[in-house]
Image 1: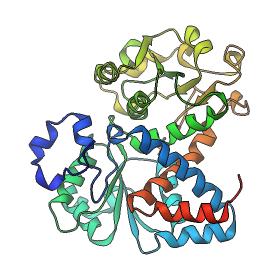
Image 2: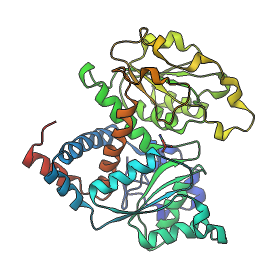
Image 3: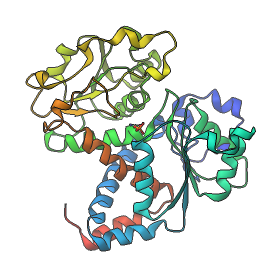
Image 4: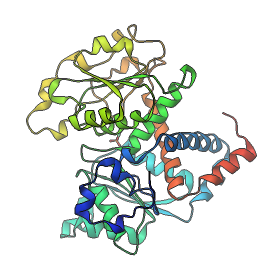
Length: 361
Ligand code: CP
């Protein structure tokens, strides 16, 4: 992937006409942005996973934690969350704290001068006057890309990190999901060749849309999309899988997929996006998992969920060794710390410290 393409050199209309893969090459330069899953390579995913684990290990000791806090203590991050969030907001905030960044936030547009008629664009430009990076969640798909493009046409272009946009992308969630899968499969041959089942609202679940594409970067994967017809995965994602040569099965039969899956990725109904009552089609228990299903799964099947959950993921299985979702959530803090560190190009200092002091597991 070429790294020399600049957002400042392309019109917004031309940029929008690019494929997702083509867009990705515009986010790798200076400053690097994190906006879509399709900008990542396997090498970059593995680099981030290694760095996340090293940050986690270094942070276990007080002197290590103190060292990490010096790395970005000259930086400030703006957390702009125009949609509700618990985990993504808190884990980015915690990741910033681990690395010493100060944070500021707007979590509700009603508390910003947008209520006085200021445009979202001017609001963002204001953030860039005070902060060195913007971490943002927004209900409008593609708005984070627009922000990055807009800042590229100012004299204060700072990195933009997409913490969830519309129903289309949640790239940092996909990073923590990949990290959790990598760790889950460490003792059973790694990622390649695994069978991953996605279950629930796949049409509007942005985490699934981002993760499904990232999994195309691994060899011989088989993806199962298990959902009622109105909530099935979009054809646009299937087209991307076809282009990548990744095998997939689209089905409503969760029972037949359960024994095959190396990982099951449960999702809740995203009824906040309902336009035609799609959610009312999914009242049955066919797309749920609970203690009665656990004997059907492999002993090593990893159960993931981006959370928050509803009835599709029973609390009965929280203590099963295959339930990875709490660990998955905590992994988000480490992989986001790794991402923020690489955004500012300071990862070598962590590797140097790690090699010098060799902190244990
Ligand atoms: N997984 C996720 O995005 O959770 P939040 O909405 O709580 O941030």
